Length: 293
Image (tube, rainbow, N blue to C red; front, side, top):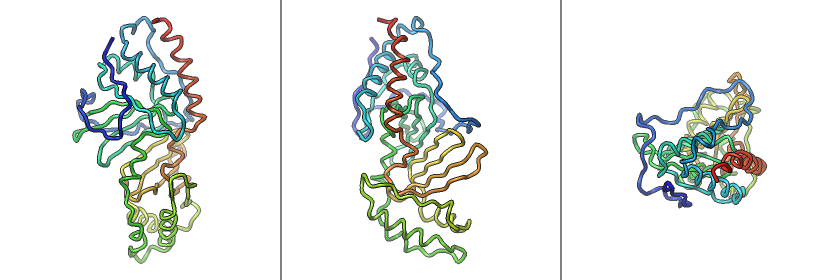
């Protein structure tokens, strides 16, 4: 049987690297937006008799099924390292998981890209070296990947600086918003209800928005959730403060919010989504692997 490392990984990402999968050092690029609502499509995978020898991929799917049964929303992510799989086994895992609607980039103390599978709550995570080559190839079972919560430790906490800035003369309404954000960031604790500032409904000029963007800065996480249009979620430089923008299928901005929360809900799989993923994976794998007994 192929050797497979399916140990639960610590938060630290140190350790030996694996074979790079992307020789050109390419980085995650968001694919063009769909024009219609996405819906679940069963992955197109080979016939069982064609892959009977790929026992490493079968072990990986067995781990995924067990992890989906054990995981509950709010738990720490369950993670498996499949870097030791050869190309054929990894390709079968990729075919089984497919590609879902949510993509993430992380560019902070480490660099990584993450892609949700067609099963909500089941993610592929690739840690990258300085040249963009893959060093760790992981599967995560979680409402949101581990790295999406790292801004809790990396973001700025000097909240007084939010209101000590001097706005340009043309900025009219941004400073009261910064004071509101400062107050809620200071009071926020893990488990608190999100505080959402709906910029779409406020009398903000282009100068106000540009000033807010400059002051809040950019954090390490960028998320794209594709569906009917798209939702772009970006961590700011400030811990627990996110900028969320919703566009319709024509690319028009329809909702623009700032959220004080650990991770915006739009980027997370819900309990119902994970329950559905458990059922769909069982339906997918039961006839597929039964022929290999």
